[in-house]
Length: 505
Image (cartoon, rainbow, N blue to C red; front, side, top):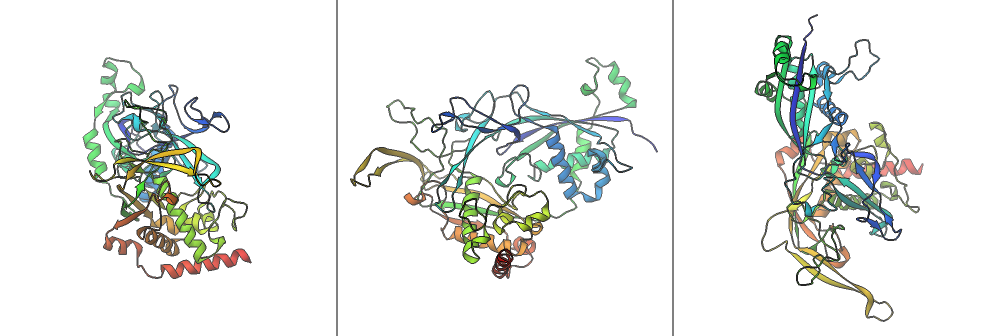
C-alpha cells in the first residue's frame, strides 16, 4: 500500500454573528460591578473558557467534535474518510486509527471590535465579553422565581478568531471534506457552545489559505529563510483548487428543518430590562440618563427581544395548553406542589420519550430542543420604536395614597416592530417521539401568539408587551416537510390521555 507523505495547513477566521458561551466549568465574579444587594456580595457568573491572557478562545477539541458530528449527519457514506480525518470512534477495533488532523486552540484576533461596546451589558474591554441575566418564571405566580436569577458571561457578535488546522498524509478529497464541514458554519448547521436552540454559537467562516508540502518540496522549504519548525511550514498555495472541490460536494441528507419568519408588531410599550445600566448617571441637564428600567438593545443600539425571552414565553403558553387539554401530569414543574416534578437529565436519546411532553418539545438538561428561536431585532420605523419614559408610583394599601419612597420610572420602546425566525427540526421531533402530536402543540401555541394571547417582556399587568403577529412560510415546503397536516390536534389529545393513564397506574 502506498503511503502519502505530505503535510497540510488550513487557515481562516471565525467571526461570531450571535452570542457565544463555551463554558469554563467554573464561575467568575465582576467585583463592584454586579452585586447581590441582599447578600452584600459579588454574584457568581457562569464564565467562558479563557486562555492565558484571560481572553476567550475556542478549544480545538470543541471545533473538532462539532465538525465531526456535522459530517456524520450529512456525509454518512464517507465514514472512512471521516475516521481518517478525526480518528476511529472505537479505539479497540483492530483497524482503528488516530485522526490525521490537528486542531489548534483558536485565539481571538488582536483587533478592536467593530461594534459600539456601550450597548453590551457589563462589557469589559480586557475580557472582550459581556454578561446576560436570565430569570426563571414561577409557573404559578407568573413572576420571577425566588433565587432563580442566573448570570452568564458571553462573547458578543462581531468578535473574530484565527483558526489554524494542520494535517498530514491526506489526499485532496479528504481535505475537501474538511473544507465542506467548515462551510457548515456559514449555513448555521455547525455551531459551537451552549444555547444553540436560542440561536447562540453561530459564526461566519472565511477561508484564508490552504498550503501543502510533500517530499518534492521539502528541500525548497529547508532552504527558505525563517525558523525551520513544522508549524511554520510554507508550501504550495492550493486554496482555490481545494475550495472548488469542496464547493462541489453535496450533502447526502435532506435539510428537514421548517423555518418560519415571524414579525411582531407591538401595540403597547415594550421592554426587556437591561440590568447593567448605571441608574445614577445624569446628563448635562441633570436628568437621569437611564430609567430604573431600560430596554435591552443590540450592538447597533436598537431595541431587541432576546431569543431566550420569546422561548420562555412560548414554552409557558404551550405548558398552559398541555395542562388544559391533559392535566397537571402533562408538563413538569420544579415546585413542591407540582403534580409532576421536574424531569431529570437525560443522557440517551431514547430516554427523552420518558420525559414530560413539554420537555420533549422544548428541551431539558441533556436534550436540546427541536425548536430554535433567533433574537428578534428592530425593523426600522421612524415613527415607532422610540425610547420614552413612564413614571410609576406604588399605592399604599392602607392610606390609598402614594407609598413613600416607592416612585420609579421605566424607559420603554414605543410600539416597535420586531422580526425573527423560529426553526423546527422535524427529525429531532421524530427522535423525541413527538412528530405527530408535537406539531399540534406548536401549531396551537402559534395560534395563541397570533391571537395576542402571549405577552412578551416586562410589565404584562401594566399593559406592556402586547403584540400582533404575522407569520410567513412557503406553503409547498410546509406540505412537503410535514407530509400531511391533518390529525395533529387529535394526536395531541391521544398522547396526553395515554401518558396521564400510564402515570396514574
